[in-house]
Figure 1 (cartoon, rainbow over the protein chains, first blue to last red):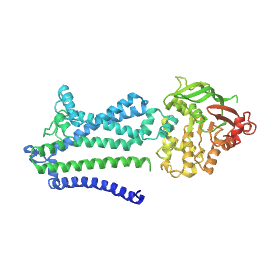
Figure 2: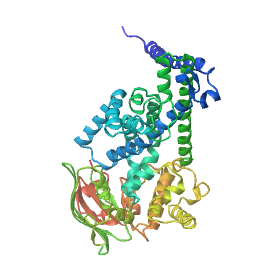
Figure 3: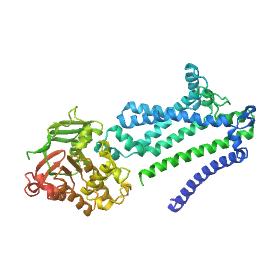
Figure 4: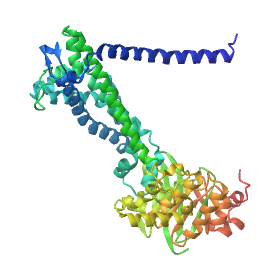
Length: 279
Length: 252
């Protein structure tokens, strides 16, 4: 017996709405839970003073600095490399088995657990190149870690730019480079920014690879070759060593708010850029 | 037809294993409108896109024969493709304004060629838009996006954008296929004025359009050029039976 379309329709809507609702509820629960426990601890003093007794008391200032510097360094290294690779693969090469292998390779790299990158960074940057546990080692390792994601998302974004835009640009006497700079990249920007934000998010939340390569020093770094601790690592250590649950949740709350703010600012900047071009 | 702007000799174009053009030989005369008619798949667009080497963008394109622009072989390794495309402008079948303002669309090409200065660019924009019969409709909103225009206006914007480069030849690939009769009339009017300064090649699916605006007409069929001559002759006393069938609508 056939079920009337009216009921299958109702069933589908219920199912899909339910899935959305469950996802949102879980997300909201986590955020509310962390903020509820963390917000009372959070204060200007908490943000801008040094930790005392390994973080049992005092603030989180050095880890805040670490969480800004390390992802910033990583993204500064990974952004030009990633976008450059994506542009080269999409605009400057013909689709052959070589590009297919490269694409398969980046897909595989994107799925590798971060601890593997951490181990590689430890062996290569920290030990072999003698950079020690430092901002540089950590930044380079994180850059390698997020590179595949940035390449793939940028590539998809660039591929989504209509071919006709390129033809128009070429027919107006633009070179390939001019076409890339004036037509392809500006139109691929929203997708590229999404990829960059994903990369920054992964850097901010990373712990394993950071401990292996940037160490966990609680002092403020004086140069690129000093060890740093990020908020995520700080949270991990506070919680795992049972040093201070309050401060752990305080750190987590700052972390969540920081990620939220970075995303908001990035999307605001992007929309301003787009609005200026298509008003 | 001795004064040829473009000379095509034994031109064959292959995409991979598929041959899209066979041994096309013809002269494109200066300061006239050449209409190219033929059913879809006859190689009209391929022919057009060979003239500004836009087919180079497709992988596995292979070209035999010669295309001479003012006597120079455009496929010669030393020939500058970018310079070629500045000399031979193109308007596509579907209007594709770049997602930027009307003003920026028009100065896109000139800026790349190094044209600078507010006054010069303003003057160029006004002149191009007037030549494309669009100025009066958009003069108060040059900073709005080209995407906001109607289809017919967008196509005239594309024409203005091509004119702004001050090319020598204008290629039009079924420029009116998606337009209403009034927009079509405006484009045709623009073309008949423009031929005084430019050499125009107009590919069209609309035989009546060729009859209206083209000085010479070529009929393409399955990758071959069947017949080529002055438009009145092609439409009244064609030599080839297939041309006659096509222009009288008995083709099938």
